Amino acid sequence: MNLNLQDKKIIVTGGAKGIGAGIVTALAKEGAFPLIIDRDNKSALELIQKIGKGDHLSVDLSKPDICVPALEEFLSKHGQVDGLVNNAGINDSVSLEHGSYSLFLQSLEKNLTHYFISAKAALPYLIKSKGAIVNITSKVAETGQGNTSGYAAANGGRNALTREWAVELLKYGIRVNAVVVAECFTDMYETWLNGLPDPQAVLDKIKHRVPLEKRMTRVDEISNMVIFLISNCASHTTGELIHVDGGYVHLDRAIE
Image (tube, rainbow, N blue to C red):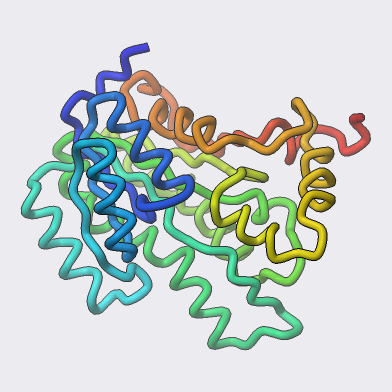
């Protein structure tokens, strides 16, 4: 399917590695011009060299005083934004029992508030282009996980903002959707597994919980859904929380 993304400029936050890098790569294959927002300068530049196109802003999105003017200048330089993929974040394990109020707020800054910051900066351009927004969110907002209050609250906020912005931006023809991720195998996920006493046993247990094909979701499966939603091929889809998770969240746990 031709997604008609040729020469479209699409922002991807956290686009240097993991799911973000997968989205950037998929966009480039469709002819889009990715605008990567990621503090990992080295990985972003390597990715741009690999895909042969794109631009990068190295900035910490959890620092509003620094990132807002930098982001505004970066977008002004390009003068065009056709889509925004909010993706940056990290499951930082800030719990209720052992966490603190300050760490909880820091978790929201790492995982939620910059979704607003990026959307606010991109909005004038998106109004002009009638672009689209896709928010990457996690199943943790719906299922809970334990010991990660900050990340769970942030993802609940991501889901809420998806629906809120879909309503607010109807008048501009801007569509807003979310892709909800459950168990997706990334380099970060692999690093976490390798820090456990028996990584393979844990991985096998996780895979068994995924109803469809008993396997982890691949990065390209997330990326393909994201770029479809960004494109005009999803022209009458807005306010949706779309789970790309092999049935992990909604199908019966008794399935064998």
